[in-house]
Image 1 (cartoon, rainbow, N blue to C red):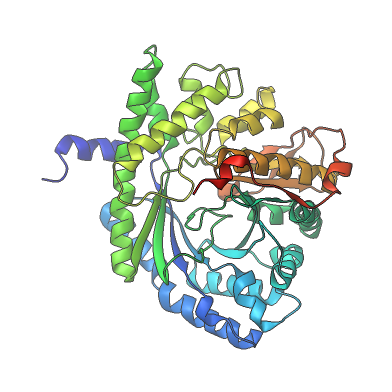
Image 2: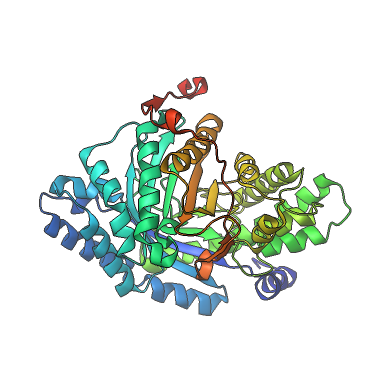
Length: 453
């Protein structure tokens, strides 16, 4: 017997009481063989290939949900960074590529398609430049396309010219989608050390080192971990840590089962399982509440970074034993608008932008889904990005920034994005200028420990 009756009942309780789910199954598809000198022909090839591999993705997902009783919240596709695929066409605008991707996503009935992306950590090619400049319009005229730009790595340092550009692009995207409170920015993320196998949007793309098609899974489970922490109230932290680790093992084993089966039915290889605890706006599905179960009055109180560090580490330690292939981001997400506990902490004043930045040193990604005043300057946005890229570069970890400057709104006002994107109060941003620093451009060199080989 693979599972005992007690284990089966535990898993059922996780689904029924604690909001356990598979957050996403993401089919990564290589489009390298679609590139050619004609943009029209390349997009036709892209359409045909994605439809070939992903035509049954939603059907398979629903079959597994029904047969296994496991909720799969999102079915998604990630493709080769479009800057690499579109560049041979010589086109001077890539908006049409985004429109084609959006059409594909709607025909497949998937939630998002990722890969309107470029990797510019060391330099910017003409194709990269075209893609970056196309982002505001591309995200304004599409509904399901997600975009990401990698600005730095531990090995190459930080491309500060690109950091400067992205402050401008984020602000332009907000203005282009001002009728929806800058919603385009919720589909745009910038990275340091972007993983090639990330199943989570908006940062998912199918890396150049991946195979032709692979199925990756992102699990969730903050509610399950919070429930486990309640069982250890008053116990020493090492006892709590062990409980989190055991719970992460159970969550991951379920994700491994779903991912393996989905890949088999789609006729592709299973890629990785991302262990990240990904919250939702629903009550009972919050990473912030886990931290509070550990003994904090509110997320953001002194001790928050230490508690988050332990949580992230225990999730990884428990999960890695339950899956053959762990990858992506893996840890704990702290998006403000997507976590009701984080939202309350912002309202109470226990969480600030600076405290969130400190927390990103030990969690799985970075400053995520944070609404800021619409009049925040381009260089200030670039400064926020530069700080987060530096944390990733120096600590040899993935960090990211997804901020939304909400046009016409200011600190304390509420913005609603809807669905899993949630809503949030607009947070204050440091008023002092970094313009002279950002406008220098150039590159921040890689740290000394990058020379390991």
